[in-house]
Each structure stands twice: as structure tokens, then as C-alpha cells.
Image (cartoon, rainbow, N blue to C red; front, side, top):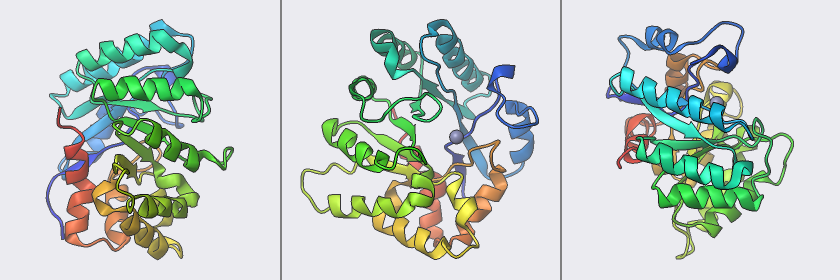
Length: 265
Ligand SMILES: [Zn+2]
């Protein structure tokens, strides 16, 4: 049984009333109360920028940067920009990178953009220049071609480190494409996936064995744990990783080591 530290690479602590996404308020203190005494040693704090509202974008980024400081580094800051903000988005990436952002967050559904939009490539390129991995929401029931668009993005900006949240959800077999890509010498393997929301959804059900098999083909060294708090309970999400049948070594990689490697600056 893996009994080392855990990094929760996907949480949405509520830092202002507008950031509330479930029925009950979910401030960072509520998350900390849930995980107190557990092996969860660090957690990503995500924000999601709105387009055309630079002041709010900056305030949202400042809030997660402040949370990271105030929590003594327990939370690490995952800042956001809106691709449609163009040069202002680029300037904000520079600002948050200098201020200590760990990763950048982009959400095609919530922010209403197409992954194939050239503005998205520009943001990813800027983030790569500032050495910020980009955590994308990567499950869209409205864009069936989205998995291929992520491959195109990774090919266009090979130095960018992309983390595809939710492993494409019920479309997880699409990740098998990466098993083929890994056979080509030009492929950089700079794409990770976080299994938040999808692993508690599938654990214990008929797709569980397939999900684990697909993730092994994708590469366990590229799989990271997240809870998507407050969508899922963090400790239940940890338990789901064991229920999926991963070995102790695989759990160490998924629950800690892979995310830790993406946090080295
Ligand atoms: Zn999320």
C-alpha cells in the first residue's frame, strides 16, 4: 500500500462568492478541514479567467497567489487568462509567472473557446516560454474533435507541457492515440492527464478495468491525481485510485511523483 505524501493537482477552492460552483460554500478552509490528518500534503488552487475582464482576471490570479502564500505553500497557485484577451493575456502570463504561478489553467467549456483557435496556441506558447505547464479541462461533450485538437496543439508547441484534465471523461479510450505517438522519435511526450472526476466515476464499475488499461498504455509516468474538489471529496478520490487496481509503485507516481516533477521550477 502506497503510504507516502499525496498531491491533489485539481481543486477549486472558493475564494470569492462568485467562485462558488456547488450548493454549499467551499472555501479553502473547508478543503483543509476535509484533508486534515490525511496524506494530502499539497493541493493545486485553480482559478478560471473570464474574457474581456482584465481587472477580474488579475484579482482572481492574485487571490490564488495570496492563498499559496497564506497557506505556507500547501496550496500552489494555478492562474488563468482568457485566450481572447490576446496581448493582455500574454502580459498577464508574464506577470503571474514572475509572481510565482505554478501552472496555468484554461477551460474550453467554461471560457467558451475552441482548442483549435490560434489564440489558444499563442497562450500556450507564451506559457511554455515562461515554463508554466498548462492544465486544460479536456472533456467536452460538445466538441467531439477536441482530443485531436490537443494533439495538434502539442505538435505545434512541442516544448509546452500540457495536462489534460479528466482524461477525456467517458471518451478516455481516445488517450490510446498517445501510445501510437510515443513510437515516433519526434514526439516529446509533453502531455500528461489528470484523472480527476473520471476516476471516482469509473472506479468500481464495468469500465474500471478498461480505464486502468488505457492509462497504462498512455503511460503511468504521465498520469496525475486530482480531486476536482468540491465536485468530488478528496479522500474518496484518493480511495478511487486504489480501487482502480493500480500497484503501489503506480500509486506513488500518480498520487505524488508525477505532479511533483511538474512543480519543479
Ligand atoms: Zn475542475
